[in-house]
Image 1: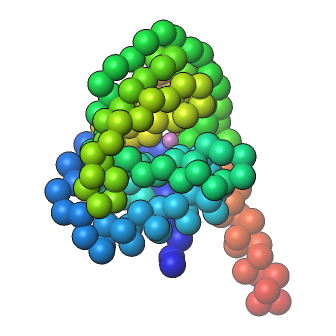
Image 2: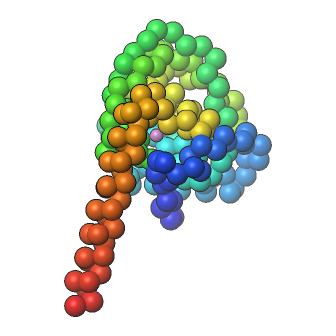
Length: 179
Ligand code: NI
């Protein structure tokens, strides 16, 4: 299965608001499988469809240490939230940047699985944060949006520098290989 390309901030496609999934077919299962593979490979604990330029309400998550507890949330809706927590977050679309974000401590989510069956899930701690973070992606929102404009601008510059360095490294490798 192919790895999907992960869009990076400030790519405008990350601002797309995802549409509801209405067709639960084999193509959806393939998309879910590809997203899990891409997330595990990155490696990351969560991936929203928006991040791989697929604009439907679909999230994959696995916060377990052994990477053996995959969770698929399709058309997720938070139906209850209590308490507050502050946790340092990162994002595959904002590589190597981490910042604290305030989120609800405990949430109850209603979602559908890959067959379209509805279920509810209670989440706390990392899973709760991860679900809230990934659901933001479906609204075109990134965790850096919670930072001040000044900090966000700094993040954009750091990422630009990272990309230049990656490009220079790739070019150098090409030159070395052709030499
Ligand atoms: Ni993210």
